[in-house]
Amino acid sequence: MTTLALLPEPLKRLFARIDAAGATERSLKMVLDHWRTKRGKRVFPGLSEIDVAQLGPLASHVFLFERCAKNDWSLKFAGDTAKQILNPPAHDPALSTLENHRIAARLRLLFEWVEQTAEAVSASFISHEQSGEILAAPLGADGKRVDAIFGGIISRRTG
Image 1 (cartoon, helix red, strand yellow):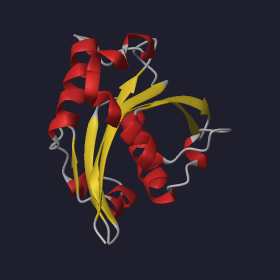
Image 2 (cartoon, helix red, strand yellow; image 1 turned 90 degrees about the horizontal axis):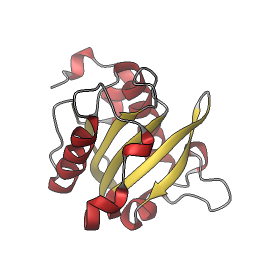
Image 3 (cartoon, helix red, strand yellow; image 1 turned 30 degrees about the vertical axis):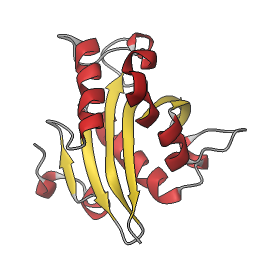
């Protein structure tokens, strides 16, 4: 469990709960279990080891981002539900171009945290128009550098 007091200030402002131990949403728990299985005894698995098809209906909530520039990530896969939440443009599906700017800001901060800690993390957010949970887990070919992020997202309109 990550204590909010130990987190960078921007993470504390955008998230109500951050947890390195597990997700609260059932579907995200199962996505995290898939990542843990693929990881085995390593720090994190590689992108090529993640098979979204194995997730069946859970794949609807899943996303895969790959590092495309120093400060940006390119969306490689988004299930139907994740795609509706992220709303990526077809021509340039980078994190910086997502139409849902609030979610993009949350993802960017989580990706930075995952990159620094090399840990999977789930985070709950609440705002006047939207609430939900995001799971972000590191992927990397050499087990030392995070090259991609595997995760999922659940969102509900609140307003």
